Length: 561
Image (tube, rainbow, N blue to C red; front, top):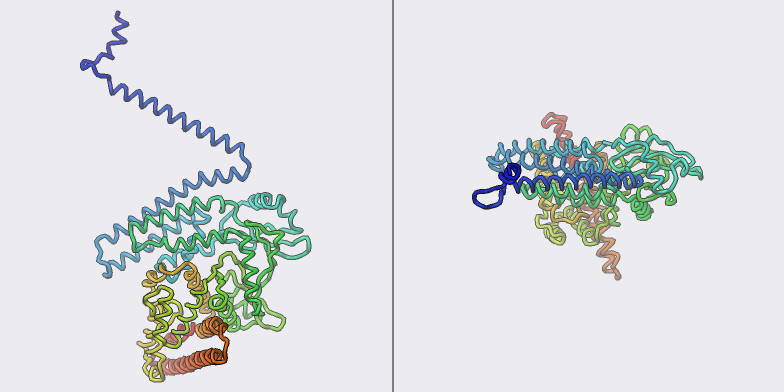
C-alpha cells in the first residue's frame, strides 16, 4: 500500500484536471530527443555523402556549407551599413552642410565595410567590388576611391586546383596537354590566372585558367548579394544600387564562360579587320573549354606605361588616336562593344613599318548595342556639336531621356551651354577669364550625382557604353591628353549615322544631301579646333603675364579629352 501511494500520490490533482506542467516537460524532452536525433542523422548523412562523393561533388558540398558563412557575414555587413545611414541621417535636413558632411562619412564607412566583406568572402565578391569601382560616373567618390583597392587584387589559390580543372575538363594534366607548362602564373585577377605554355606544335600560348570554385558558388553568392541590395534599397530608396548590380550580374555570368570569350575575340577581330593596327590573340579551340582558354601568346607594352611606350619607339599620340578610333568604331558603327578596356587588357607592340599596333585582350565582357540605341548615340553626339537643340531633344526622347542637356553632358563631356557661352564666336574668347575657365571645368563634373536618375532608365547596353567611354577617357588623360578625343569620337559618330541613312540613298539628290551634311559637320569641327587652339594660345599668354594660374591651361585639355 505504501508503495502504491508513493507512486500514485504525486499524480493526484485536486481539481481532477491533468498535470499540464508535467506533460509539457515530457513533450519538451521528447521534442529535444527528436531534434537531436534528426541533427545527428543529418550530420551522419552529410558525412556519408561527402566521403562517398568524388572530388567535384565534395567541392560543391564544401562551397554550399561555406556559402552559409558568407551569407551571414554579408547580412551582418549589410545591416550595419543600412542602420548606419538610417541612424546618422535621421535628424539632418537634406541639403544642409551638416547633412552633406554626415552623408560623406556614411559613404566612407559603408565603402570600408564593403571592401572588408569582399576580402573575407573572396571570389565573386571581389569581382563585383571591382565592377562597382568602374562606375565612377554613378557612385559616390568615397565608394570609388575605397573600392579601387580591389582592382589589382588577385586571389591566392592552391596549385593543386590547376590539376583538378585540367583533369575534369581534358582528362589529363597540363604537362600532358602541353609540351611545356610554366606553373608560375604570369598574371592573376579575380576570376582566373594566366600561365605561359608551349603546344606540341611548338607554339607559345597564354593559358587562362578559371578559379575552380567560382561556377559552383555563383548562384548562391548572386542571390545573397541581390537580397542585401534590395534590403538596403527598401530601407533607403535614395541609396539603393540594385539596378547597378543587375548589370554586373549579367556581365559576370558572361565572363565565367571562357568559350564565349573566345567567340567574342574572333568577332572583334572580324569587325575591326579593316583597321590594320588592331591585333587579337588567336584562340586554340582544341585547348579551350568553359573554364580554360588557350590563345596565342603576344608580347607587348601596357598601354598606360608611358615610359615603356617611349622605349618601344612608338608615338604616344598615335597610340591614343588609334585607341579612340577603335572603340569609337565599336560604339558608333558595329555596336559590338568591349565592356572592360582597362589598361591591363590593352597592349602595344611595334609593327614592321614602325607604327603602333594595339593588342586587345580579355574579351569576356561584350554587349551588342541595338540599332535604335546606336543611331541615337550618333544623333546625340552630332546634335551637341552643331548646337542643334531641337534635334538633341528629339534624339534624347527617342532614348526615353527627358533631360537632354544633362544626357549630352554625361555622354560627351560637353553641354550646349558650354558651347554657346565659350565657343559661340570670338567674343567668347575675350570673355574667358579665370572664373570662366573654372566654370567650364565645373560644368563637366557638376551634376554627376543627378546622372543616376538618367542611367536608371537606360538599358544595360547603354551603361556599358558609358563605362567604355569613361575608361578610354582615363587612359588618354593618363598620357596628358595628347589628342582631341572629342573630335575623333564626333567624326566617328557622324560617319556612323551616315552609314545608316547614306546606305539607303538611291538617288543623286540623297547622295548630295549626305555629302553636304558631312561637309557641314567637318567644317564645324574644324572651326572648333581653331577656336580651341586660339583659346589655348590666349590662356597661355595670360599665364605668361601672370594674370591667371598655370593650372588654367588644363581647362583646354579637359575640353579636348
